[in-house]
Length: 423
Image 1 (cartoon, rainbow, N blue to C red):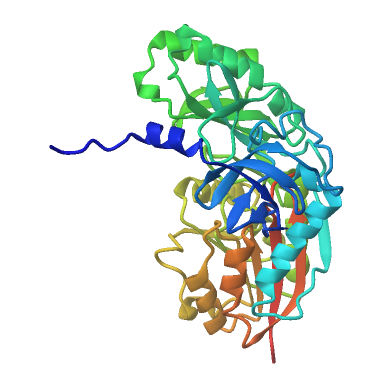
Image 2 (cartoon, rainbow, N blue to C red):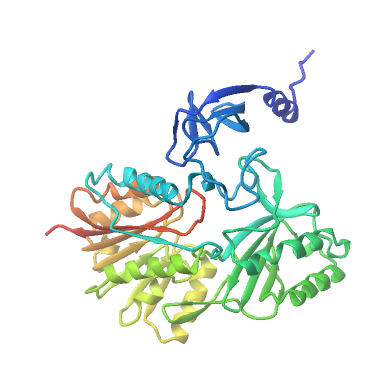
């Protein structure tokens, strides 16, 4: 007779009984406490905590002692029990310590190839400036997932998001309870604040299965809350205004699902650094260009080649550049599967690359082989940035490194590294 395996639910229940009292020894590069080969989020070095052990990670049940370095959280959703909202992980560190932690993480990655790397400049986005968020929506409430959990922490406020987005939380929960909307028990809602209003995209909602009455209810919701657009799994349910953003003085229609920097302040800082590095360049290429965050500013007085694998982004970039009479050759190409080769890159005197978190190692290798005079790496992941730029160490100098902190109280950062080929 076969022995029945315990369900995951039973396994998780058994794991919750594995409690321990530990003293936090040190901290990880992401700001978690660390003790006995175990990460302990929301705990500081020196604190004694009661935890639930989950393999290489533990959740804090109670703090038995507190570090004198602990800061009071700015948000009511942060902290015990558990960890509260999983959107922020560093509020207990305090503003300056959190910034130092992020800077050390960036420097540790770059110094593997450039031992004397230093951060030349810091940019910080202010509180309540984030212009996009992806909420988990249930009839019980709307919010973010608890850290490493599917449990949703229902938000009442948020010190990271712009108020216009926060104001949608209660109406979204009400819509999820509205039977006339025919929405599933749980789904995601991505809100992006554009210059013409909020672009709200539902994920996990099959628009094709909605009745006419349900579509009317969604259209009414868009009207009631003055949304620019509401879509369900990429299909537009209501568009009252085209969601627009301005990049380099050019108006761009935002396609559903397109990438946009988290804050306007962060976008401005990143663009400034790219343009400063481009002084003297006549023929730049922008790799992983998205909707033209850097390509359009670079195109003011230059011919630019912009490459991106996401078709809708390339389409809107082409349309916007043509309407503004900018010389941008926008090419659709999957740079992960088919990075531009050295022979294709030799015509350029500057290259910008801003890949996803996974980085662009093969593309970086080709850039180095092509001997492009100036390379600007923009990254949201210090680990893959450090790996990618190792390709430049033999022939390029790191001439500028900046950190752009636009992710509030999370451990994420954006960075710009500028490299010049040695003559």
